[in-house]
Image (tube, rainbow, N blue to C red):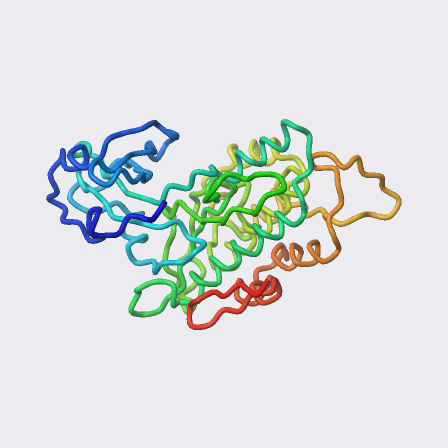
Length: 336
């Protein structure tokens, strides 16, 4: 299905005085895709062209202004591995909401796919894990380069909430078939990064803690790289790089406010546990979900992303090169 052009949807810089019922005039709802704390996503069909889009309906934090995610998305230049943005209806379907129009990624998200493999007790094929790693690295190299957005200062854009649920598949995964394109989505927590600022300026306590780096609450491009490494770790072993996920979550929930703002708390009291995903000598593997060995090469790439200290972590650009990708002038070229 061809993507909807901006002329067929609301312009990226939609006026804040858009009619409340303008969305219903142009689109009909097909089905609800999901609902959460940030709003509801609905599959919709354009009444004239019959083309489908995903409508993300979010509550306004400041009525009269575009929602934060729309402000970020309209600045991001087109990229094969970032979900496409088609526009926004402000103050629709109600004055306290806005509707963001996004690409229809009919393959669902990576979290749902991982659950499917777990339900069937099947290991996720390493070629697919490499595919995900490669294309997420491409997306980050693009965003972190400073050329991925229209920001006049060419500042890197940091996503800050990379997790399996925010990684979409353009088409459904079919065993034995071609791998679907991977799309990074949900930019509601994204922010521009200015390298010369004090690290306190990057304090960020939002997002999903299971997938965030040891230096949290400091959020930098290196933190995005960690999150991608954590996804690879989870696809291979069935869990993020945490020894006991439930204990980790309980300790975080019980932390005092002063601890939440202290990076040492998350490094020392809530340590991450990175487990090699390659074969360990003397260990037998069942070849089932979370109990199989990947190659030494993939393990090495993952370890480059999951280095404990940000300064030791490979940048998204270098990681992309290591994965066989050339990045030039903000445009990512796949040489695999």
